[in-house]
Image (cartoon, rainbow, N blue to C red; front, side, top):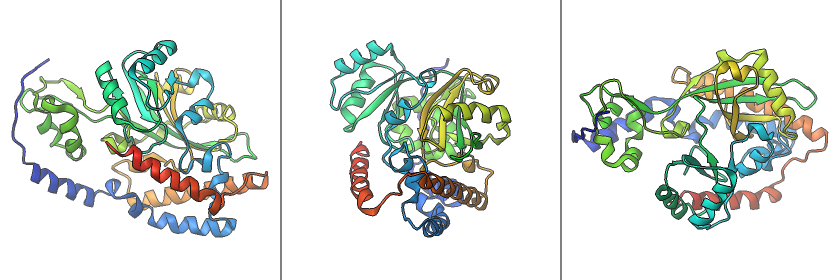
Length: 360
């Protein structure tokens, strides 16, 4: 492996303007409030039909607000069958490194591990940790409750979107994301920074990677050397989301029917998983579920670079109609719709939490 270091002196202002151009011309990087404007009007239409502005809370009765916001990751993990869970610990707030290490030892956890806020979105403060030093840095940085999981080394990471009407035993897999982590392949000539600048996705991640990689970003990888730069599979962290809907089969639906029937009160959402192989996945084997996301989750195949914004709007509106149908059925069975006065304190607390977790 080459260890040559070369600073090529890239122009930071030119990167800034190129990043702005990329974000303007490629809708997958548009602000959420822009992408969701047409979807919001459909939400209002569904709310009028339901005669409840917060009908969404009934879509997953086992999740706080149906998983729209504020659902804790640890609560979702606890709902899963034991063989599907990664090893996980949940330290008390402001725990010392010694107490965290003691919990890790008791659970059989060793480096590498993944640390993440208990409530969070889009990969915020999710970190792969490889040493005591990095663990201490994370403990010092994160001021909210967090959890630590084993780093699953299975080679395939997917986001599987599943929903089931409460009156039916069989559900539907409506979306699969295949994830391609941000990486470069060395040519023996250019450094990592220059290799990243050769594609739009890498260019957008450069401001963050300067801090994360330090001088490593100026190393020249040897010819053919594959360097994975981000190990967290979030779109906002540079992971490329690819449409994997060709993987949807009756066997896959049966696997997730079984998983879902073991998580009562959850009817709609995305399972973020790692698996040993697609063949094993179809058999329901070699699977670990890192997270279960509720009403706020998206059918992530829309972020495939080949998907148009018009197709994305159609898919999102279709899924919000599914939320309405499931929530209405659960409401008939006794699940309450959220109320403004019941939800406002939770929303206020969530906004404060997010301000706290965003402090870096």
